[in-house]
Length: 207
Image 1 (tube, rainbow, N blue to C red):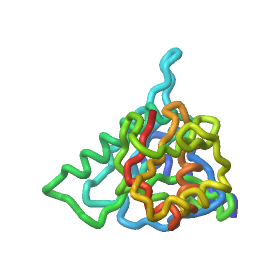
Image 2 (image 1 turned 45 degrees about the vertical axis):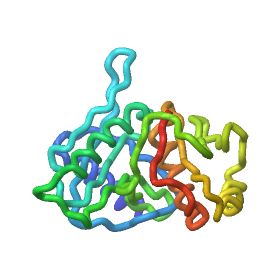
Image 3 (image 1 turned 60 degrees about the vertical axis):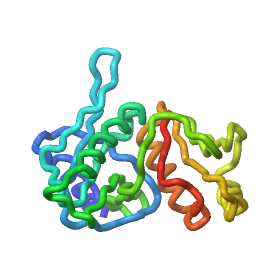
């Protein structure tokens, strides 16, 4: 089973024609297992002297398909999210070949199911900056604060449930220095809070 799992990942990562490694994020659950009619997009981890760079390869992307973003988990969000925003903007602004049913997904490796897994982010609008209102912030150490006050992961669901019915909106925010791998793990945790996060805005903030 492990050999089959490895082959799946290798086929995904090397399908761009260049035999280069992307270290995918890992998690212990699958949000979405199967995606059909897809185009792979790759964001590679690069080093130039002391600088870390994010290199995008979207040669095989087709606007009308589901986009799978395969992103190296070592990259910081400050480099990843601006590139994701550019890709989202291109797809959202396309008119001629637009497909309203086409989704965007991040890929990651499910270490329990031994399969490639996906998490959708089609409706997320990213902002580089701090929002106004109630801020749930994940720092690069994966600690959580609510308006600068620390909160345990196991208590966050109850906190959101208490806010239900109140008029103020809640925003999920992430440290710009957080690794992309840490971000995906937090995204999967956030998915587990549904439906308690019903009053959370679709925007995500990185600062």
